[in-house]
Structures are given as C-alpha cells and as structure tokens.
Amino acid sequence: MKKKIVSMLLAATVMTSLVACGSKESGTADSNEKKVLTMATNAEFPPYEYRDGNDIVGIDVDIAKAIADDLGMELKVNSIEFDSIIPAVNSGKADIGVAGMTVTPDRKENVEFTDSYTTSTQIMIVKEDNTDITKPEDLKGKKVGVQTGTTGDLYVSDKEKGIEVSRFSKGMEAVQSLTQGKVDAVVIDSEPAKEFVKQNTGIKILDESYTNEDYAIAVKKGNTELTEKINASLKKLKESGELQKIIDKYIK
Ligand code: ARG
Image (cartoon, rainbow, N blue to C red; front, side, top):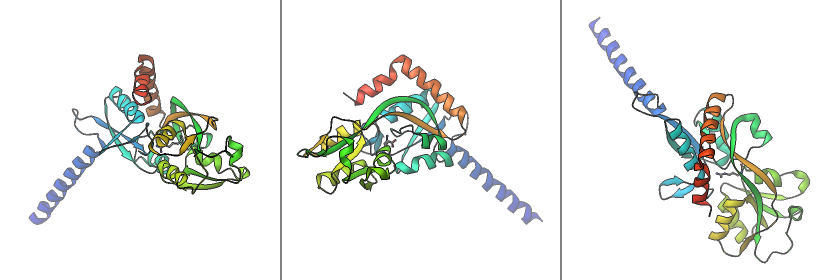
C-alpha cells in the first residue's frame, strides 16, 4: 500500500514537471514571461529574410519583431522550406508565416492573410548576352528556373505556356543554374532578384515585369483573432512610418 502511494506521488511529480516544461515551451508560463510568437519563414530570400551568421535577419523579421513587440510577445523565427510554411501555420507549428508571401486566391483558401505590408513584382533574369528573351511570352519552349512552390513557379507552370520548369529549393540555386547555362531564365521576386544578380556575374534583370503582387502575413485558417490583432499592429506601424523605415533600411 505504502509503495503504491509513493509511486503515485512520484508519477504526480514527474507529470507536474512535464507540464511545467510544456508550458514554458509554448510560452504560457508565469506572468513575467512573455508569450512566444513563432514565425515560419524561408531564409533564402534577401532582403526579406536571409542569414547573417547564425541570425536570421531582413525586412520580414524586423516587421514581425515590431508586431510581436506591439503585442507584448517574444518573436521566435524558424527557417523551413518555402512550401512547408503554410502547412506549418495550419498545423500550429508556427503562429505566423512571414516570407515575402504573395496573397493568391489558392492560398487564401488555406490560410488567413493579414492586410498587405508591401508590394512586389515577378521579374525575369537572363544571361547578359541573351537577346531572344525580352518579355514573358518569349519563355515559351524555354527552360525556366524557379523556387519550388512560389508564385514564380505557379506562373511558369501553366501548361498552356509550354515552358520547361526546373524547380529548386532555393532561389539562389535557380540563379546559379542560369549562370551555368542549365536554364534560360529565372522567374523570381524583384528585390531578391536584384540581390542575386549583384552576387553573380554575367546575368541581368529584364525591364518588363511579369505580375504585381501583394505580400502579407499568413495566419492559421480560422484564426481571425490573431489576424485582426496583427492588422491593428500593422496599421500602427504604417501610420507611424516605422514600416517604411524598416523597408528603407534594407532597400536603398
Ligand atoms: N512571393 C513569392 C511567393 O509568395 C515568393 C516568396 C518566397 N519567399 C521566401 N522566403 N523564399 O510565392
């Protein structure tokens, strides 16, 4: 009998400590500890998110940090594959997806999007000496590199366009395959394109852009409470000029 009580007590102690651990991780711990806001991103997308030593930095990280501050929360950033971000948000592994993510009708069916925080375009990168690709229609019959699951991927994968698509886990890898002559063009967001062209020789960005897009933050489908809180923070950041300041810090 005594033995049984001891082991029950032991089990109880183990359980409480497990619970304590658990609550610490999910950020619901004691009052003086801030709740954690977990951001999923893909840190292969300068100037929005990229690695600087061991840190993940960029426009999106600074914006998310400013939102977390406004909500009295502590920001945690995890870098994963771009096409895993929406699943991570919907499974609860991440609270928000911030990754230069374009609002599209398809994605809207799967996640909530906050108000847009900036706009972008898809552009084409080709070899400097290329003369036969100048506009989107010229990609017909060509090999085009994209980052898997991005809007660039979506546009060129339209069967009717007759494009041979090469998909890469990172945008930079698509650009490298262009410099190596393995693809004829890369379709990617304009600001990362500028960064990648700076870091490689012999390639150029074409003047004509493919599309105009809105970037927004993804929140779990149905979580309108968090979406609205973030919208309120975004509104403050826009009105105070803080948002523009963050963008100007990275885009000169
Ligand atoms: N704007 C594009 C999209 O939504 C590309 C985003 C890629 N982002 C990244 N962090 N790798 O599909």
